Length: 224
Image 1 (cartoon, one colour):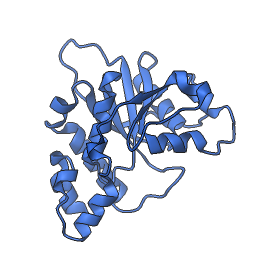
Image 2 (cartoon, one colour):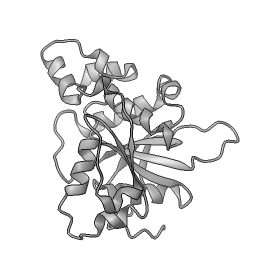
Image 3 (cartoon, helix red, strand yellow):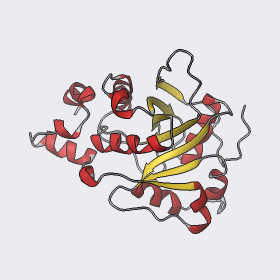
């Protein structure tokens, strides 16, 4: 088991819903971005963030935690969200838009970024370089969370980077952490797209399909 003092007791490897298939003879991805979310449902804005990681990552893993430290699950049941992620990662629409990176999907037992990174290390082995991928709002919540150990952020970033998509504004990291945090440029076209807006549109019988990747339209239609 990989020895990672990432302030976590979670030692279970990520559970893959779908792992991107490598071309014959291709080496394993050297850089992997872990993209946690509640995926209720995935939107085209989420894919914007995954595309933005192409400047660093060879593979993006869409991660759905079984529980979050800051909110409870509501809306679609957890198994439905897993189906959505698996369908999106498996879709033939994803690779041309996201290549590189390849697109995978997985379940994490832990909800903190450190937990997810540790589970990924257990699943992927010691060779790959890892990063957590998120939007500006999630990064600000991560940096201001009341962790019991004040060194939590510093220790986590020893073992994985943070990639922050500049959604609705650019993220300014704490100076002491900036060497391990990268800001990714993101087009502003989808700044206002959200899962909440998709829910609102479905409930009020308004057009919503343009906000959701086509590969999961039918799943969303049946589940929300």
